[in-house]
Image (cartoon, rainbow, N blue to C red; front, side):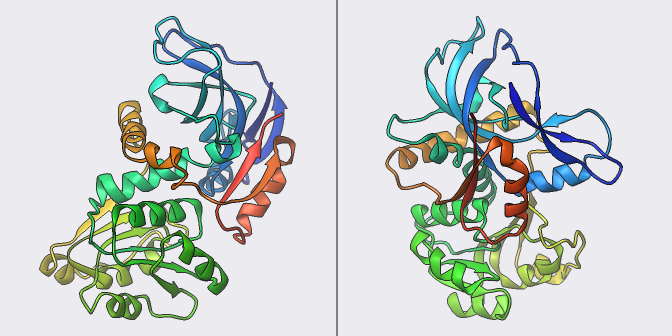
Length: 324
């Protein structure tokens, strides 16, 4: 089968489509024929850091058809339409844990299904499980035009958060984000985040911040939070990995600083995140309310072009790889 693999190198890995054997499912595993897989910005960082070891198939989310199941699998059968979260998804076939799969309705395309798992699981975990966002609370989401940012906007809006505040360095993207649930847009290239948030919340600050930028905006985040506010960091796209913290604000406002990642989660914890997302969001996904816009699709053989496109950061929504 074809698989897009990260080949390690002294100066960082490179992506290359190779022929590798079709995997065989174990007694408690499912083999899926992949029809489409979502591409995520974090894959670029992983590729650049892969300097030693064996080639690894890229990709963490997919949609396709079940082709075989292990003897102990009871929930799925051959022909089921599924989407899921896992490893090695940029391939024509992938092995998945049964509880890492979610059903795909017949009227949903493979491309739309492949765009759902990773970003909505990540955003739900950050916003609901860790951020504990409730109806009527306010939220600020930076890097809002990326997949996770847009998923967080849509979830927050669906939960009744008010106002939903989002930032981007592109005025054009902010204008387009308004139709997905953004009440207040902050142009990060010119506006003061703290001033904009205080103006939008009557100087109270926001209850929850979903941060994808990291150290370069960390101090502003602390200043932007309301009493008992929660800051949830899911990425460090701004480059800086360190920041200063005003302990007086942390203490006086009783703030919570939370980091989330799949890298240090056990398999049981990863499955729990998937199941929580499925429980809370699948009804809205089936109803068409939680669907990310698809910016562009690429065939698997053009994954190098897809990586270059996502690195350029001009897209809005998801980039999806289609399998032959």
